[in-house]
Picture 1 (cartoon, helix red, strand yellow):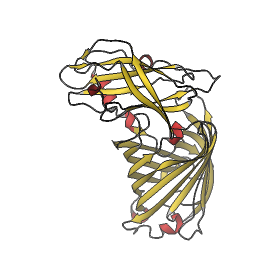
Picture 2 (cartoon, rainbow, N blue to C red):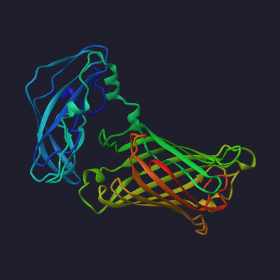
Picture 3 (spheres, rainbow, N blue to C red):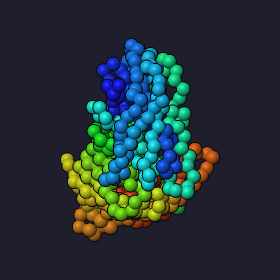
Picture 4 (tube, rainbow, N blue to C red):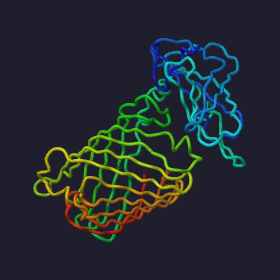
Length: 394
């Protein structure tokens, strides 16, 4: 009954929402992989759901593909009450020799394909996979609109990292420096997967502050407010080809960014730019690898409060990141001014740490800055300083 299926997260006319769920951990090579088909009723009337006993699909990894079949045990047609959901378990047998990160796509008889991502462990390594329905989906509860809203449009799932988030402290005034940054997915276009949206429209916001925390009274020295709106395209190559090295294009961002410090009077600084940023990965993301990001931009509107700013910021910047998996990493950011005579460099050295206080990824960060414009207020003044602290997103 393929007519009941739809692209993950997209509602049918009768209010049915269907998604494909993969295992929560790595699976063994050549094994039977548990898959799940989840259907939720977001409408106001009950609907019937009878998924097929088998579905044809294909495994994708870079330019390679393997035909596969998903098999389900016989089951009766389900009636889903408004706000409720149901699930059907499937099994997929892996073709011989298939390993690494794989994209499963099921498109037979569908207006748009269903996709999910799962990992196959290298031979000899332990596996930690559990069935998708037992590991990631709660027990069905009739009338549970919480589950439906989570599947159909999760507010939290639309947020992701944009720039690093950290708090650091150093010996020179202004001693403290902190930054938080995020982006919110406004629209998802065709392509990609539920786990890895490929083509999106994003709203971004970054705020960076320098704080005279050791002075009496303490006061903020300068804060940059940076909202942005941009189109983002990210390739699936680093995920689908995680076991391979070589040079890979990561995708690009292109859009508009405003930056100002809200100081007022002679300390007021503001600018508007149109930018394009692209990145490349060299090596395997789970081992030693390098990432190179290049950004070019142009100023739009007036620069009446800071007409000389392009002399110091120029029309582009670059980043080079050397990292070992999710372990230690060194990030170099630089720009050189319009005439390449105002070189600015920032080095960020991150060490993963574990703490009971914070139940998520945390890093010890050492940052060294040398050049012009650590603050928007002092874009034309040279400075150098070293600070250390905690980074939540690097």
